[in-house]
Length: 280
Image (cartoon, rainbow, N blue to C red; front, side, top):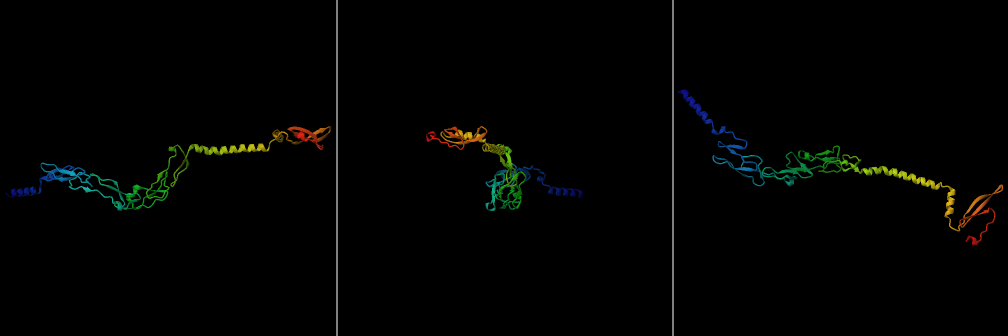
């Protein structure tokens, strides 16, 4: 009899500790309520009432300015974050029923800490260094980095990054001057590059030709110049040319007088008279 009593007592204790609902296993989109698996509300909605033996869970959409990001049994949606203008924040992405509003620091500022609740002014990057926006969120000072090879920054700015050098080849040009970390590449037309070589050569050739012409004019044959002067003389003009005349064994200088373009010879020392009528 005592043994039966002990067994009865043990069963009573075990029966009191056991609850029917403790053995229920619900899926990730469900939750346990009073021994039943009730459906959770989908993202963008909130719970109105739990399920019963005859009805499913009741859900409704989140109110404006609130969101619910996951499947839930919560009866309240979470309000969107507010991007405070006086903290230097602006909206990067507007919030909706399933996602929160995303804030960021406005141009020229960066996050004061990792939580990015407030922003502080950037320090300007010097020439040859650029602002790296991707690092502004996690740093407490302006993330200026020196421009890498192939990039440049020619301004002191709080927001400007390093820009890549211009590709002269893509524009059908050639490189005139290589870029630096503070200046862009200078390009020029390939035709202009050829002209820069041809122009000095052409100038040298022209200079040589002009020099040859001047030399020829200065060292021209005197007889040819006299002949040209005679041919260019006016009718009736007179020009005296001394020519020697041989008289036997002696040579006497003879003076040629041009009259009307025709030479008239006369021995030197003898008086030459030409009437006014002949001159006319």
